[in-house]
Image 1 (cartoon, rainbow, N blue to C red):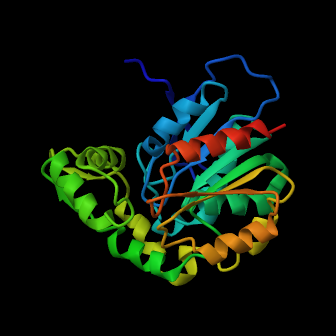
Image 2 (spheres, rainbow, N blue to C red):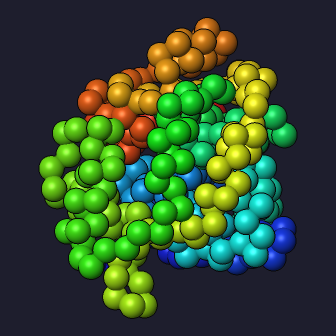
Length: 290
């Protein structure tokens, strides 16, 4: 079956070759319609958005970049550049290369942090935004959990072994998953290595700056959230999330009273954005984009 996307590349400001998937719109769209840019989480890659991107590309051009050190993007020479501000600079380089003046940002976890940071730099570029299970305040329990597994460098002899390891590590976030879903999750986040073993598809060095509390996330993102005011915003939370608390979501809604908030049942960090309620909410958001 032919892919619905093409593999493309752009150059980072410090000379890395970075990869993105481009899903062209399958129907004719207005010349001034902004594209959708989907930005993944800390250890993830473009495959996370395969279902969502195919759904949206019926009517929208969709770009799914892979941050440095993930998937087909080149690994950084300096692990200190694995930080949200550098990732934002990389996305700004992509926008310049593709001559994109405005876009719809869909950000999961790290991608949501990047979305808020970009709003502080030039919020006119953001036509609408989806913040998936992330907010200006991150629950320390979730940060501690991520530190336990990021950068561990484990490998597995088969996809089934990989799937079972993911279930053991993340079963509380996806309690409804059967083994088929865990196999799919493994194939999204891992790849077969040259030695034939299956390992996570990211540079283990991304964990180095993340281990320091002051670089895991910017200290105060409330002004960044406020910068998203005046445009369509969707706030998504997993009902079982250990990163985005109910209290933080409530404050986000207070600051952005016109934003829609959707909670995905029986899911923790982070919703896949292919759940029926998430897809419907994203469709509603896009219907509001000028």
